[in-house]
Image (cartoon, rainbow, N blue to C red; front, side, top):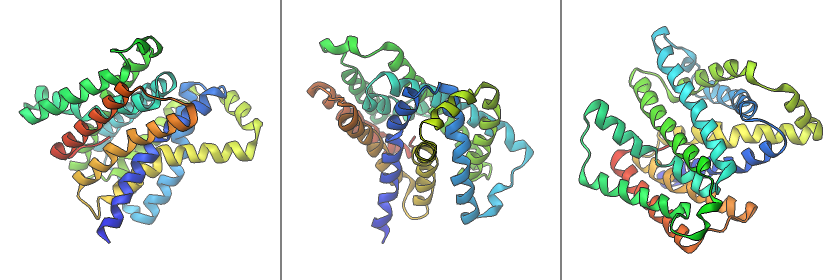
Length: 296
């Protein structure tokens, strides 16, 4: 029965990897970046509320001194999503996902300078392999490097940095006694409220007017499958399998899903060298996740 729950982090990884399809479709229909975020997080409140009601209503409780850390988490989620959306819109989906998956490397570096945590030789080897794999994926060693915008690469790196800070902030909040669902629900509530002044509701009306029923379903699937449900599934998996195993499966599934979606839907065919870089990076991040018990 335990092996059956291994599918949960794999599904979570594939759902995270599907976000590029939603983001590109919404952007191509005239929705700007901040309006897109408002739609994603405000709608995601619904499935997360359902998950909390079904899990434990006590998860709604929060102490005042927990709010500053949750606000940090909220700001990191905004930065992560803004950067990741830009990256997915400008570079191949697989490259965007791999750049995001470098977050554990940033965690190691930040922890080294802030908390003096030791970086072993094995960690260094994994980091070097992952970075080299990313270099291959950008096409810098091939003639097609000009087709990969620098802004997209920098945005992907920025997404990974925001994700790394979120990982550390949320870990600290969990150590203070908060549940992942508690952190998420209050983070996206804060974000949704803060984004209201920057949201273009006329863009939303124009998008919905295309086909109200179909667009409403699409937006709900976007929030549920690319944000809420992956967190719910990954959190649920931790009740039955080790967090390190869960992180390893998600580390491999998310970029693989992005590669598959990019290939099937957008005909983003990587060169042999770029595909080798993809595989090299995934292997390095899986090994690093196994050692560090961390994932995006």
